[in-house]
Amino acid sequence: MKIAVMQPYLFPYIGYFQLIYAADLFLIYDDVSYIKQGYINRNSLLSPNGATRFTVPVPGASSNKLISDLQFSMDVTKVLKTIKQSYSKAPYFETVFPLIHEILEHEDRSIASVCMKSYETIFSYLRLDKQFKKTSEIEYDRSDSARDRLIALCHKFKADCYINAPGGRSLYATSDFAEHGVELKFIDSLPVEYDQGGGEFVPNLSIIDVLMHCTPGKAASLVTRYELS
Image (cartoon, rainbow, N blue to C red; front, side):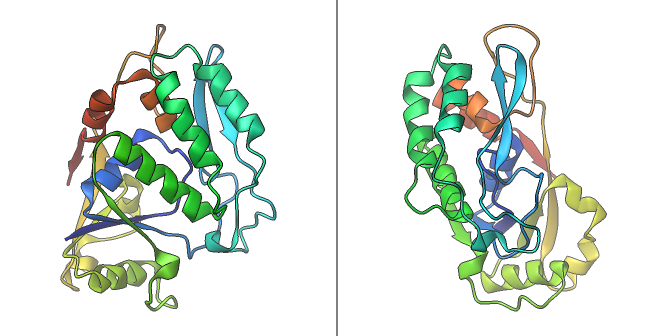
């Protein structure tokens, strides 16, 4: 069993979806502090003027609050307008925009719930089956260090492999996990490029850009472009 754990990000870049795909179970890490100015509630789209930031408001957002205690605003009109203006002429707009609209207006406004809805919807659209759980709904010792919490989550699900994002190389040692019977792996994206409708390719945009420009089959193939080490 392989698991990955990551804070919920709204419509993140394709590398996040590669991390989800690489794991048998993806845990949405929502019982940790909210990160302001991060990617939990924002990302970038491709507009006629280049990369453009979109943001969904989080009322009362504070680094002193847990992600699980915060919700997205009900007002997503501006975000939907920005997405529509950016991609109305994209080849898969008519298919993808209704999915995004449904996700952004999801009844349960908690950050983790909206993000989970997006992951489930997108992987279903790509015809890829993945499993998700929120860490806030799991019983384990939250007083442990960050490393020991991850090891505890691995043991909780009898996982023998924990897959981490590349940035984790500076935080965790494979030997620390191995001592507890868990193999630590890191994911590295391979070059991802697709037709964005002309001009120089702009990498690392929201998954929305991939979905708007690629067939489901092409997008699914891009999700698998990574290596584990």
